[in-house]
Length: 223
Image: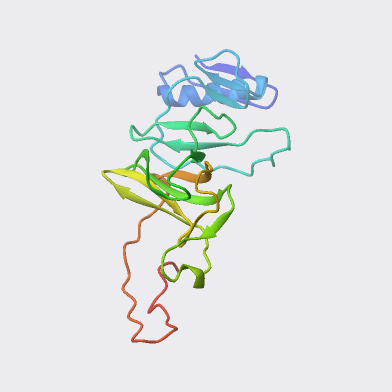
């Protein structure tokens, strides 16, 4: 016996033999999709054209069309793949959630005058990269009593380095110190911390200058 299913756009004629489950499933999507315009798997309330409530394993490719532009009042998110091969959403507007990078401000008060020789951030150097993006010291400075200091200007020097598996920071105004050594100074250091998963370490390149003041790379590291 033949069975006929009628939808507003489709007439499907099926024989009474058992069709493969995948074919029946696809046909059901066509029928239900045409009537309801939204399809849900594991949910009776699909919120879009197709919603899968649960895990999905895709062995082929996915083609993604154009996204609508974000409006000013919408939050932007990213999809990331973790080490368990699971896809997760990263909400960059959530200050306590996962993010692609972190901006951390360190306020270091009362160092030895203007000198921060070694501040251990405790950030794991195996998993993260940490750089100083801005810094300032809040006191007036004066040339030190060191020999030759009066002949030198001074710019703030900040840098990050790895010691003992964690990131450390150094901050200083070379050859100068607090005008009033009794005053308590404060460094404000803004840092950018991002996962090593987001960066590619290219290694070192030796550049022999042969006593010249200019040089060039034999080939660009990125084409």
